[in-house]
Structures are given as structure tokens and as C-alpha cells.
Image (cartoon, rainbow, N blue to C red; front, side, top):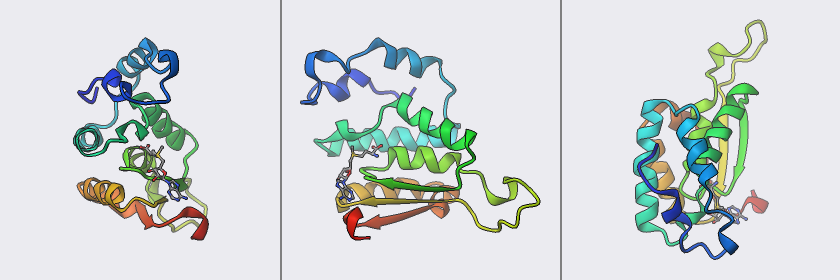
Length: 155
Ligand SMILES: C[S@@+](CC[C@H](N)C(=O)[O-])C[C@H]1O[C@@H](n2cnc3c(N)ncnc32)[C@H](O)[C@@H]1O
């Protein structure tokens, strides 16, 4: 649990037509799914709190369950190269980067000396700055993430 109420996030989301997003399923799935490693959960919690406080568009953030799914997908498929278009404040960035396996634990025998990398692009400098500030709290995360400020089509 990240300590905020999912319903608060979507209260003023104009896309929340007929409350389709106000689901008990989100809460249930979050409560009963595997938690993030505690150090990642701590970073996410403060990042989410700051995003909620500082950004009118806080509803851009992926939900807890979506982040957990991304985390598990990166782990299960052993993704080592990820491209994310639209960092916003980096909650999904951090969730995915946390799941990248260090090269030493990638399948042995392959001639792969590269560390996993997540490249993430964002046009909003304020949002990206917040993402970077929080990713820096864990060195292994910041080492894995390349933040690129600017429109994705021009990179
Ligand atoms: C829905 S939000 C992304 C949510 C984020 N992945 C998360 O999990 O919190 C979409 C983001 O894409 C950014 N964006 C929109 N067009 C873009 C473009 N052409 N290049 C890079 N970023 C873009 C917006 O500024 C916005 O922050």
C-alpha cells in the first residue's frame, strides 16, 4: 500500500465517465498483489505524495496495480532494454527500472556485458525533474535510467 486513496486521485479526472475508474477491483488487486521491495515502495510513496501535491494532472500517474504489473512483466520477461514515452513524474519508470536484472544475473554464457537500461522521454521539465530527484535516491535505479527531456518524435 502506498498510503493514498486511489479514489482521491481520480476524483477530478475528466475522463472518469460514469465512475468506470472508481473500482473496488483496483483496491483489491493492490492489497492482494506482491508488494514492491520496501526501498522501492518508500521512494514511490514520497514521489506519489509530491505528485499529488504539486501536479494538477496527478491522475496521469499509473495506478498501484498497473505499476506492479509493469514490475512483474519486466521481471518475468527479463527485460533489459525498455523505452518509455511519457515519464510524467516517473512512478512507472521507477517501478520498471527496479525490476531490470543486473547483467550478472542475466543468462550466463551469453556474451552480454551490458547493464539493463530504461530510456524515458518527457516534454514537461518540471515533471521530469521530480522523477529524477526521486530516482536518485537509489543508485541502482538512477544507474539504469536515462532521462531524456524533449518530444519523443524528435529524438
Ligand atoms: C499519462 S502521462 C504518463 C504517465 C507515466 N508513464 C506514469 O506512469 O506516471 C503522459 C506523459 O507523456 C508526456 N508526453 C506527451 N507527449 C509527449 C511527447 N511527444 N514526447 C514525450 N513526452 C510526451 C506528457 O507530458 C505526460 O507527462
